[in-house]
Image (tube, rainbow, N blue to C red; front, side):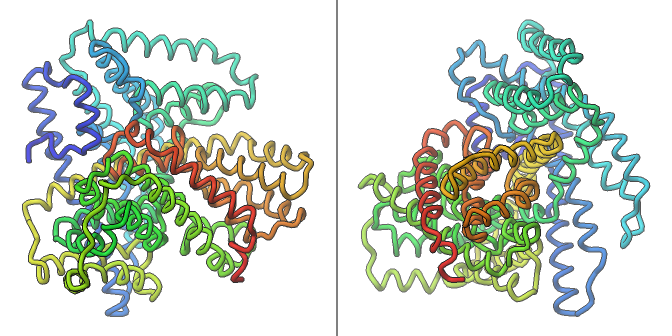
Length: 630
């Protein structure tokens, strides 16, 4: 593997549209970048492997030897921030950060380098602006120690300034050697925009909440459609809002990014990404897909049915929708593409299933609702199964009605062939039950359980299927780190943006507006669906529930809506918003996991979003779906 590999498919698509801006870079800079990149790839690969070892050893020590390692979780958490930041550096070097290129692709070939360099300049500007705050953040964290390890939190927090510095360096290296005539237009636009906002700085504080529209609608939209990476677009909007219209220090932005990127549950994301790659490499994916194809492949859209069902079954295992998608997509996508499916359509369906399965337990959002509203979590778990099934059936109906007769369809297999493929696939098909059983049985947490899957898959590949290519291990670890870094940087920037919006008092204003609306339960439910859909695309589920749950759930009860029914409607609405472009973070996460350009998936996702809205309307109109088994 050379210094610039492996590239993700999305990166290849994006870079194919643009000239290789490194072609003109002097050889010395290219060699330096290659050496730096190779070193970062090795470090991030070791970080992924270390996380797997630490968490699995912790499981064995606790469950087998009944001697818990009190330091394992804290060490894994400390290393996770380093993995997130350095992984995002590798992703920037390999072109793996997600961005919208719908308008960029319509530009002429001579104009496209302008947008590429504008994105790099925007990244440099953002990271240079937060660098002092990142350094201050380390100083503040130095006053606290990691108890079990007896070391300062500064060692963990140092990942922020180190990662930011490396992101700046990589961006500068990618700009290095460019002709001034090519760089100057993007540089002038960047300077003019910055100067314009600073000239307006005295006026912005007086605008109050109008600044929310200026920065979180105007700036985000302009940056996203200009092809600036999604994470950078979110970060620039939050930075501008805090710096120009409030007195909040920028160090808060860095702290919120840290909180979003290093949440313990998100540690399952890189581990499940690696598990998905390992399943494919060991041949487990092939035998599972072969069995499922023999069983359902003759149906119209049969493999899409498998995707929908697989997301329903694995949902909740990891506690993260990103991890759920990362566990399913690598297994099914290759075979589905071999049968004629388009990658954009597959990613669109993957995103839709992510929204569909938001209500399925065990889910963090269900637990959050129970904790902030005092609704029985057991009742929420019971009520969440059927709504997800109803929406899934509607997605299946859409798949069946649009599937072409020659797409994703094969000949009907005989009972003997199905039976033989089942026997071969049993060790692979057992994996989801092993993972879920480990969580339910208390053997491992949702964060740790992926390591059991990794060890199980490695043993199955070595001893049963006899497929384990050691040469692919390092590229797989690098790919895991790069993809995880791209995903986690988006989540971190979105978390900071969500915090800025909520601190503006926006939630109290919206709640007061809803209270003043006439019309009873029907109007209240309709407004709630609209509200949760919009906020779900901006804030994600948990922040919305924390802010609005204590306000809106009592109102729902007062107008005669059962709390569990209202919870299911709210969760599905937020799921639709979370996976709806152009603002839904979940949509870009699905694109990153599926290695698809967001533009390709966007052409297909609207039909699935329409199906989700139909399912949401049915769940809202028929309370029994949510409360019939309570």
